[in-house]
Length: 134
Length: 134
DNA sequence: ACCCGACTACTACACCCGTAGTACTACACG
DNA sequence: CGTGTAGTACTACGGGTGTAGTAGTCGGGT
Image (cartoon, rainbow over all chains, first blue to last red):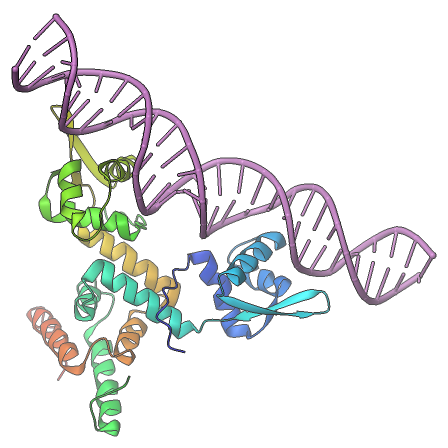
């Protein structure tokens, strides 16, 4: 199951996926309603996007009566992994530390947050005792 | 001053920009030659891409005799800022710490690297007399 | 039994990317 | 001075996105 597919998703596509990720299942109307606040899209627009996402295998659907109930077919984490990794490759020669450095220089993250993450890592590492995941 | 333009650039476009970033100036032929190893593109392909990038203001050019000499019109850092920020927004609700956490859980970065970055940050901060991490 | 309304499928269109062929032009060399 | 050639501009085409209208269908309520 560990496919290293490259999930390049646009902002609109992600907006739809976000709805599915936290709704588990949703009809076209549900998705449209959920997006209404941030972006007003016609029902047909949402339907078209979902159809295309379905064609690409990014979402799955089942029929209920005469409507489709969609759900995400890719996990949020999988998408994150894929997209972050892509960006890292493109802009930082795949060097994660360089990316974090960038965040630091841009003031996106401060010492406290960094320290907290480091502590958490240490804890987790400690519990497992060994090298690590994957 | 700080323009918050969104520079959404594809991999190919970035490949071209990378060449310009470290060549300072380059003709179409130069760019094509530089990319030859990683991707074989026809001269006209590179010319088209550069033209389009020029139209978008991403690269600038001057005429030298019969040919165009291109150079990047956006700094690498500016692109990084913009693209990283976009991704953070899209996938981590704009939370940089969440992104770093993700890198940690994915094993992209380890405790040592993190510690090194934190130390560097502390050093820089230290000059400012701010609080510091132990 | 019918029609309305809910849904989907199909179609459309402007615009971008990747890729590259062809057409045009102006300089350089013989 | 003529022509080859380098180099750009124009054109093209298959795909994808974003957006949405229209057409077709099926089921439920009166």
